[in-house]
Length: 75
Image (tube, rainbow, N blue to C red):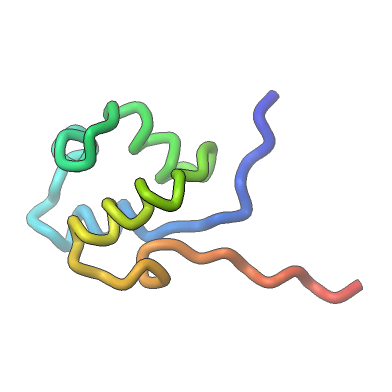
């Protein structure tokens, strides 16, 4: 079983605020499969740094507006 990533993202919201872009359209623009975009959106896969930058550039958004990595809670 794959451990979900702690990285969260706003890709789905960004797709819909950018002309209701489909996962397939985003995938074509960044050179991956639709399934990869789906896995990233659902938090099942963390993109490489390079891919994360490509996604942010598609939406003309800063990287930290697209992805978030929460700080660890103190124990």
